[in-house]
Amino acid sequence: MQDLLFPAEPQTRAIARELFSHVRELPLLSPHGHVDPGLLADDAPFPDPAQLLITPDHYVTRMLLSQGIPPGELGVRRIDGGEAQTDPRKIWRTFSDNWHLFRGTPSKLWLEQTLRDVFGVEGPLTYETYDVLAEKLAKPEFRPRALFSRFNLEVLATTESPLDSFSRHEKLAADGWLGRVITTFRPDDVVDLDWFGWSDRVARLGEITGCDTSTFSGYLEALRSRREVFIKYGATSSDHGHPTARVGVADDAAAIYQRAMRGQVTPEEGEVFRAHMLMEFARMSLEDGLVMQLHPGSYRNHNRYLSRAYGRDTGGDIPQATEYTHALKPLLDAYGHDPRLRIVVYTLDEYTYSRELAPLAGGYPALFLGAPWWFLDAPEALRRWRETVTETAGFYNTAGFVDDTRAYCSIPVRHEVARRVDAGFLARLVAEHRLSLDDAAETIADLAYHLPKKVFKL
Image (cartoon, rainbow, N blue to C red; front, side, top):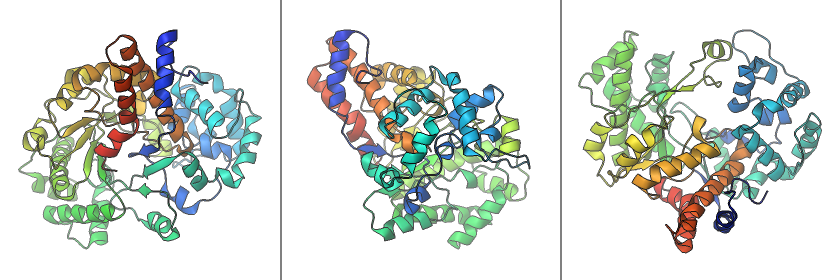
């Protein structure tokens, strides 16, 4: 599909085609994602097609749930004692029978491109597609490490908690495999006081680091210690998935911490503590150089049925309005012009693009705009993002594309979609004589490769 996502007007389409040719073969950088490092460490054959492409994909399970098909029928494990489907062929049957529900969605685009480009499967998705995929998955050229090379992945960043083991990363290093897989420091589970079991996890953090996490100062020291370990395993960034973008300094942070240890904090105190910790993490980044990524704006586990039946992070998140201008000001006042700090900010609230985020990125050297993510990583949203932020922030205050996916086999497809959208956007600027073809060719290469490499210190 040579002209996929390119403008319909013939002259502009021809320009987009030429621009895309400059980046089609560039290596892929995946500076933020959620692929399990064990996938590459073990390099075992992928499981059946259902476990690979359906069961772990929240985009898929979410759409079918909206039509009354619970995740358990797609193989998602229940935590409430209920039964889940374990027969992969029955899971695939349910999925293929309802494939029409995905018309017009990015899920349809990604999956069809994955089947075509990764597995060489042409034609409509049907029940019979299962057997074609199962046969291919048994072949060595479809194992994770072989695909890593075929995808032309230069760097893949995984995401770990401060409590996680690095055994998988250690195995990758011991094997002498040449693929570059790094980690990302994601401390939400020991920062969010509202997250059930927080005090137990903080105690575990103390055990791992040898720090006295019964005190706030010991807690901060434990986090610094873990960041050092993450850097040893290749980390160049941290990631923070808070409900809001609020940052601040709380004089009573230590007192809130002590009350949290006794289970006596209010939701507002939890928000104050998260805001304070973002400032603490910014200070740590000044010392150790980790790029800060901020992913606010998701009402996590909004769907009570999902969280009770299937647990956290099973596709029940909902975007919410998010404010940045006032929320980030204390951080930008303190460090927005400090060359040691780099902050990449994402949003699920499109209304903030032109009103807040683009002007902020255009005014503070430390701040970069992250690519559209979660509900906004579709072609139309990617186009809107470029159209909205470029006029104020330009191209070079953005951080390049981030696939942010658990679906390993969709990584090259998602990057190709982003590169095609950028080719179309730049082609229109060229066709309107607002940009020369040479400048557009240099820009698309920067957006696809050079900018993320620089911003994320890869």
